[in-house]
Structures are given as C-alpha cells and as structure tokens.
Length: 436
Image (cartoon, rainbow, N blue to C red):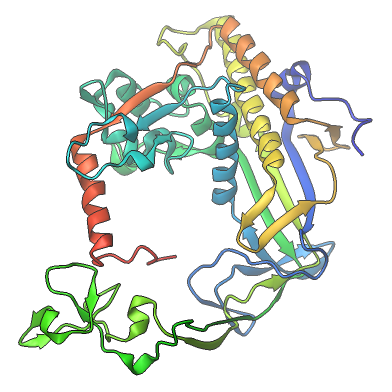
C-alpha cells in the first residue's frame, strides 16, 4: 500500500521544477480484468510481418531484465494522451478543474431546414486532435471573425516555445501534451511544442491467438436469393424488382453499401449467413501482464520560455525568473493531474481489452544526478488541489491563465463540409469504416 507515502505538495513540486529533478514517473502493473490467461485485443494497424507471422498488431521485442521479451502495444502514446485529456475535460465540465478551454459549439447554430449537427455537441481543445491549432477551431468563428484572424488566433500563431505565454494563457494543455501548428498561416513552419507528458501501455510476453466468427440469419436468407439492385431514385436503398432498379448502360445496377462495384448479393445489405471464419492476424493476445509507463519530463517544461505575461506585457529581471518558474510549475501540476485523473477512469481500452491495476498509484521523482527516486502518493482530489494551488501561485507571480471558456461557433463553410460528408456516407459514396 502507499498510505505510508507523503502526498505530493506544491512546495515539493516547485522545488522539483526549479531544481535538478529530471522527471516524475509512474510504472503500474496491470492484468486482464478476466484474470490470468484471459485474451485481450490490442489496437489494429495495417497488416505487417513479425517473427514470421502476418499480424495487424504492433508486436516488438523489448529488453526486460537483460532478456529479449516479445511485447505488444496495447495503448499508444497518442491514445493515452487522448484519454488523459478526456479525463481533464470531465473534471472541467464538473467544475472541479479551472482550466483554459477553447470550444466550438455545434448546438449554437440555427440550421433551418438543413441537416442539424447538434449531435456533435461541443468540441473543445481537449478533444480536437491538434488542440488549439486544430482545423475545426481554425475554421470556426470568434464573433464575426475566423478564429485564426482574431486577436487570440494571431497570438497563438505567433507564439513559439521561447515565447509560450499566449499558449499558456489560452491552451496550456498544448504545452503539456505537445502541439504542431501546421494548419496555420505558416504551414509546416508553424511552431512545434514537444510532448512533456507521455504514457504508454505494453503487454509483456505476448502470444498471438485466433478469433472465430460466424452469423446465422434467423430469416434463413440464402446467398443465392439475390441479386439485389440499387433502387432508382432512392440512394442507399435496394430492391429485388428489376423494373425498380437504377439502370446503367441498359442494365440494372447491382446493390452495394460501399461502392459502385457491388455484387448484389444479400450480404451487401447485411442479410444472409456468414460461414465460420478463423482470424490469425487480429485474433487477440495473451500476456503475462501489462505495464503502463508515464513520464512527465521537467527538462521539456524548462525549455518553455515566458518573455511576457499572458497579457503581452514584458517580464524582466527577477519578475521574469519568478513568473517563468511559476508557469512551469502550473504546467507540471496539470500533467500530474492528468496522470491521477485518468487512473480514476480505469483501463477499459476497447472492446475485450479491459485491464485492472494490481497496485496503487505511486509517483516517483527522479533526479538528474541519479540516486533513489523519491516516492509520493497522489489521489485525483490531491492532484486537483495541486493544480488550483499552482495556478493561484502563478497568477500571483503575474502568470494567470484564462479560466473563462473561449466559445466559438462553426462557420457556414465548416457546417456545409460536414453536412456534405454525412450525405455522402448515407448515399454510400464513402465507407465510414474505411481505414479502421
């Protein structure tokens, strides 16, 4: 148990950020929720060859305790970042975390007779793949101005790692999880911010398995019951009547959900039996255990420089040293909160891939000069209090971040693009599963 460990407090965090500490680290041992030997399913990628076998999983050998051990990636750095940001958003929406957030609300638009996008709800800088630099925000409006052309958007565009105050003010999570402003007016020359916080889950001593599948149609529809035809004047619909079929070069067009090259078989409309199949490329894995490794790099935060206050006024001399250290400390607290909050969410990674921790969360503080790590406990509530204390200390040092939500509305062209894309999916011109 970690009850005998001290709780990580603001004084310790400030000392670590200002001093010679290298990183905060957690290493958590996990096992399948179904117990030892239960199969779990990693994320899939394009098929590749590993150790003489065709697979859709990211297998690799890693050196563990001096031996080469077969491992499999269970959750990538990017996926873990998304989960941590999701946990921060949940705390923000519950009012337990005061944090700068930029959002675009698809429920704020009057769609008239056009297809509503209200179901998209609110997409924030904690959801968008490129955070404050994401195209969804870029193509939205702040008032009557495209976000990129607004004062806030220009400040974000002009920011850089050695002038990070505007990002800190409006989207500090981008400084924790990283961001490349490749969609702005500078294109590929846009500013890049290194990830300071990384997390990854890997299965140890992984062995591939096999997956079986089949389907019995309760209506008994046979594969030779077709053909089905694309119904004339009704995109996405089918008919067995040739007189109702869409014609092409004098012949009825076979029905297909996904392309114009369908066979017209009942399976094109999800009818009929599927014979038993055996899948060795993505048949799940068994593992001895899994390890989640999380690292918050303090040198990465120290590479961020704050030449001005968030409002643009200059920081000089001792004020700059004090304000800069306070801002970096607030960012470190935010990263630690993400670690603690995502732990509370658990490890249900995807269908048939739920893991459980075998030990409590312990945060280790590593020094550049080596030595035995200092160990701390950190509950989600403690982590939220740490963020609040660090943010207040930073504000007192002249480095406040904007806690009021910056709300955008989707522009007409963005709305039209999404509506067109949805229409093409409905009409079968785009396969929504393609690329998965």
